[in-house]
Image 1 (cartoon, rainbow over the protein chains, first blue to last red):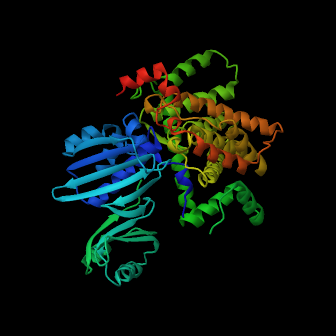
Image 2: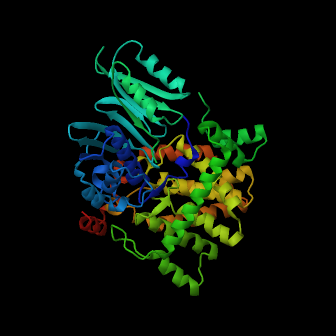
Image 3: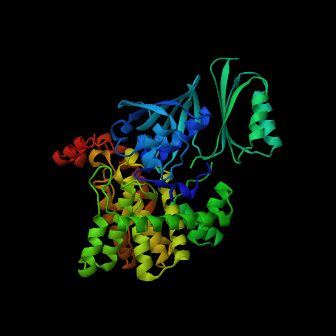
Length: 221
Length: 290
């Protein structure tokens, strides 16, 4: 994969911990982008090592900051909990020490009215992250590429249709993953691209037959 | 499948293409990310700037960190050593004070550059900026040093996740010490093999280092440890300059680092369930922070 030197010379971030603060803020940012709306409520579960150490590292501030759209170097992160109150985001934090997954994992349920998303991911050191599940579908997103998360019905030619739309705009696909609930049922397509995507293109994808929703996740910072 | 980014392959590429170690890292970055050369240089400058800002802020810091264990350590040291000489040497104490200053800034939720992580963010700036003052290296050299440090970090990253939770403190401060030592060796004119030797010596002495922070916070022992690791990186450089060599080759040191990281029990990997975190005083402090 396209590993950059700036994963070890960076990120530029608000301390104290690249995994507990920067990485967590980034997971929050992705959740926010998947909801694609100003969040009203959030339930965050810190798992494994996170369960015992999140507080002292300001991981609660970092994840809420991310949900409010702050990047990991945003100087407002230390005040994120106060800002959440000002912006009308209510949240609940839970901890579960046992986890079969990565030692630094978290789950986010985020909503605005009826709209609700669930994300599970982990923080893998140096601010590197991995989103492992969105709304129950297995995904593999590290936030290093501008990405699309498309919910669609499992029908022949879906990959081709979407890939052609991207190709027309000279967008190169770096990585892609498909997952379906059942044959012909709802399916999830994650596409990590080399280039940023314009709003119009995302709108075009949304208009395609059998596409349920399409979310754009810019490169996280 | 792309070959693993190891010290051996890095050196091989430099020889094949007749490039410096720095140029090989730059070429690799361009190839892997498609970024332009000037974009990369700009990014390096940006990081150097933030590193300096966090050093300046840390040297002035006198406010308690969230966990209350760290306050004005670098200020106290600056004051004392303004009138007193250091037994360890002026270069060493300066590197330690600078490293502690940046680490304090990190612990206080200030803005820093993770090198490679937040908990170890003081070590590279401590070594680089103290050397810059002593040896008048200048920003061009410092940027080259950063590229070497980055190349080193990437070598480790191929085999081990750089997080206390995954590999203990050796995967954070240990790696940072190796990055700083290699970068310093290069900036001081070390030959290719010497750069990697400095890494190997610095890291070998940090093998097995556990991550047992009090209350799970990045305060104790993290902040002072940044100072120790910075001085040790300088010692590694001096040992290499003086003619010593690591018996175990650098790539094998990385293998050992990764293996030990896996073998360490989870109680000593950032969970605050062992070591200093579970001492009587550690538990008292932890209780106050709940």
